Image 1 (cartoon, helix red, strand yellow):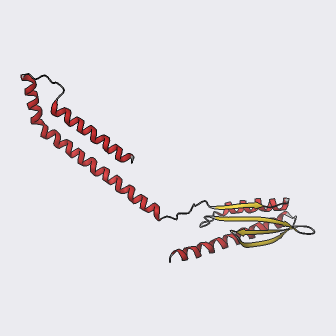
Image 2 (cartoon, one colour):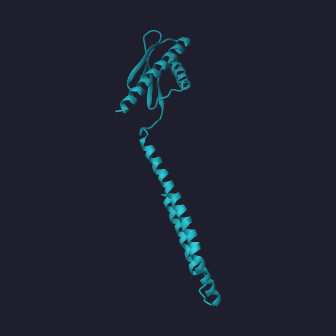
Image 3 (cartoon, one colour):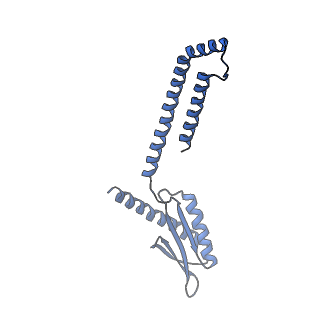
Length: 185
């Protein structure tokens, strides 16, 4: 829209330039003025020819810009119309062990730089168990992908978080592969 307005403004400037050259600025007509007007008329075809050439150049450049924008818009339409927000990791842990697991899991997930993980929601939830520990469950979307019993030992939690990240990566890769295969049809 802005390009069209620019085109209209430039056309207006060209028209005013041509009209001021044709008619002159003085309304008094004496011999000198009439000679000047005749000379202007003699030069008019050359100046209008140049202006027409400039106008044609501008028109071609303007049409090129419009074509490029239309091609760019067509390419953008072919992209996936969903929001590409990446992976969201939701924390529903209750205890200090669960918080440690979530922190380690999140750090390892960020360091992994996983591709094709767009629009995934990973939910970490914790449920207390009788005795020492709690049950940790990981879901991707609504699918349960990992479950483990947490214990208060830090090294054990660290090892579980590495296993959980690897399992989630595999599940997301499988989902991306299935999605790619289905989009082919």
